[in-house]
Image (cartoon, rainbow, N blue to C red; front, top):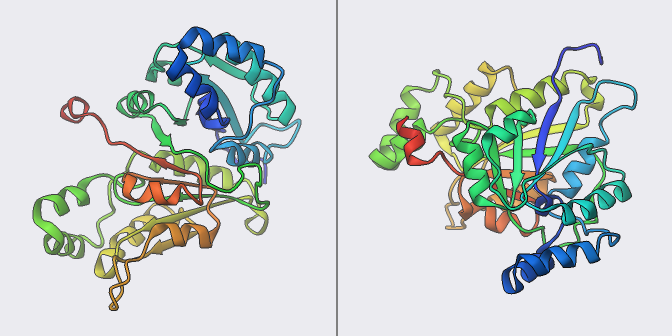
Length: 312
């Protein structure tokens, strides 16, 4: 089915999101940029350890078939200098990661216009400021947490499984604004009355559409990509997102709507569901969910646009 039209999913990733540079970053914080650069150059032949997004990038690149149009492209886009760039290049080649494009800004912030010049659909970084610039520039982006507690090198085989929160991630902020203004009862009333009205696109909807087009290039039974909605919605508030996903073309494989608590008072958590479904990368707009999830599943926080961007 490779004749199906699609554009490659193009991911921009920072060095510290792909590799575990926490030790080196500690040197930068305590001893300054010059010693950091000298350390990286002295270690240029020392292979970097896998970081938060290493496994998902490795699995995504493995989808590509040599000699065919790539389904996934990755560019390393980093604030680092060329000393770290040399070490990163050796590390990429060691792991067999087909990442031919690199951007090193030499300490300057990563701007949205640079990401657009590289054709980035999704930007993953551990620099909140860079992610915010991407978001303000209408690029889907996420601040990744540290790698899960288990060894990042223990990549599990199988499909690449993306898990997305609903409101403010796949969907726009309309419903969240109602909740903040009118409370839970007002939110439930609004969602029930608008159950048949598709929700607006959120910042990650366009990424999901690109992924869906890639999935269409495979036979359904052997598609290596899986997508899931993971939300705390419960009761009648669950109908509208399901109708929306049908309107978008049944665009996710699974929908996990957890609810806030059981009758016995047990507070359900997204982290338990994410571990159970084997998610490879989870995106949410609340650190309340991403922080505990990041202990077992690679996770990223999705910020909203800056206030001046919202006003524009």
